[in-house]
Length: 360
Image (tube, rainbow, N blue to C red):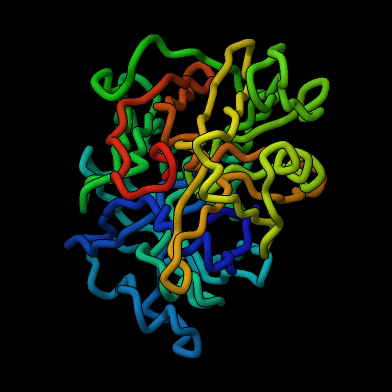
């Protein structure tokens, strides 16, 4: 979830279970919340004790209780983030935030209006944004900036290892202040941040199949280079509608609802690779990485990991490299040097009953 994507996700996307979240605590004594750690936004919000009960989400998630915290400080500044189907509204408060690595004092949003079914049925309670301050919807300093300001880390970096297939409770790892070298293969390749708002980088090109090979099904995507953001808060890989349509013509995909595409499960083993070129380095996804299987009415459906999404100026047009991409590549977000590091991550193998040759 981030300001680019409507909370009203298509049913197929919601069924993928691609919600990576962890637990934080607010207040003293601590009140626990499950949040998405989102590099595509910069604000922290959780449901408020004043959450309007007209919204189903307000009944189904824990609320921050300021009267139960001796470290709470009132702020009251109005807060809102606009989404495709409406806006999340609330107000700001200040309290102690605790994660596994320690505590930090900061300002966050108490959400009082949570529209849409996605918030109601989500496994997460809120969102903790990890983008630059320029991406913030409100005046509060982002959590990681507070940690930097208060000197929590020797190196102001954080890193993600997301698992595509996981055992219960082991979806991956977020490490604040460091890099877990046991979670990836080979050297990190760094791409400079091109715009300090989201974690935005320049993408040289995108190709389908083996570049230069006979029979390459390479549509003219990202011609001359384009903008991309590396976003843990978006489930799929999204791109401009015209480019994503051209990509699926090469893949043989059929348009579904909400900008999504479906693929023939029987043809998954023969689908081509898709390669992203960032700072001169190729990052390739095979069909087992970009095809996701869901069950609809008792039968398997193969959903493409590429979704059409036109982001308007001034932020767009751009590609969003979401969890489908990041489940293949270990990612490092370096605030000291304003760069993103990527390298193939160690992954769990897919279940044996997935379509084709482990197509997911």
